Amino acid sequence: MEKSRPTFRFLRIFLGIFLIVYALNKFFHFVPSDYGAMNEDAQDFIDAVAGYLPFLYIFEIIVGLFLVLNKWKTVIYLVLAPLSIAFLMFSIINGDLNELWPALLVAMINMALILSRKEKYSELFD
Image (cartoon, rainbow, N blue to C red; front, side, top):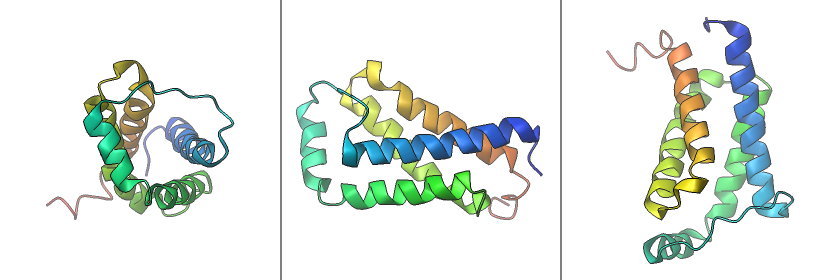
């Protein structure tokens, strides 16, 4: 059982909506965003994976929908963990710490949601 249900319900729904809006924005560009100039390594990485990014954004929309609809949340939190860590690492490596807040927010909320269900994961980490 999630501790403090209303708080974690809010965080789950907020994270789901955030992921959906973030991913849809990558397709439709309705929220202005400027990450500034990327360093050469970050730009090389983005160029190398550019063909896979639409699939990642579609996956984020699906994950966000599952969170909003309260489906498979125990699994979704674990699936989202490596993605949120990668998002955070890329933002740190990119060097633009002013734009770090979305990645930090996703990682922190995801970690809080995982910890809220730690009894569900006890078998995985014994």
